[in-house]
Length: 109
Length: 117
Image 1 (spheres, each protein chain N blue to C red):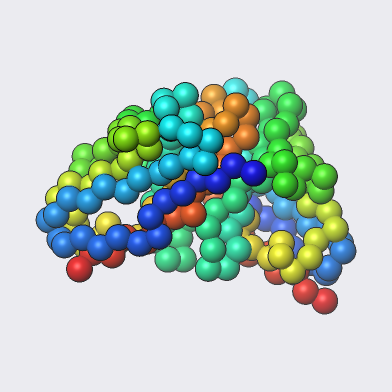
Image 2 (tube, chains in turn purple, blue; image 1 turned 135 degrees about the vertical axis):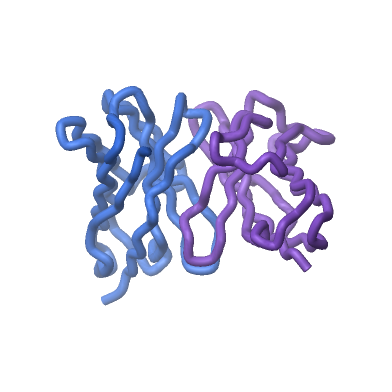
């Protein structure tokens, strides 16, 4: 049973920078896991932000960026806005199967 | 702009089969993978499985014995059947579009299915 692990919660001040990470129980996350990141606000469907590690969708704000960091996938928010308060989920691909992380609740305070 | 809309019963009895349909508008169902994802109340996301427009499928191993996903390209729809449901299957069910089985871009709004007698 593959497990994808994210920080349960993080807090950041408005205008600050925060990095969320996504780890795999199988070992280091590489670009071959095609890391995706999604944002979900209460009562809404998830919204895609990042795919294939660091690629943005046409609607993704510039302050969101993806990378690989220390064997994990990472999502960095620079210049955080109050509207960025949400749950963030990563998704990793395992040769056909796909596994979501447990989510990180980001509080902007 | 691609839009996805889930439809189906909001209440299913234990041991019965949950059936949902996702209708795709604003684009063709061809050339893409189409996924079902669920989220129990207050919990995280779980990938259920996907179908390619040609009909090939891939399911979450933990649900594989109970899941069937099918596609109707003439109607631009794909469907989910989950058999022998229990209260643990109560969740918001989302349909989504996958590109090349490496990224999800568009999501439906989700539909809550409650399993209860």
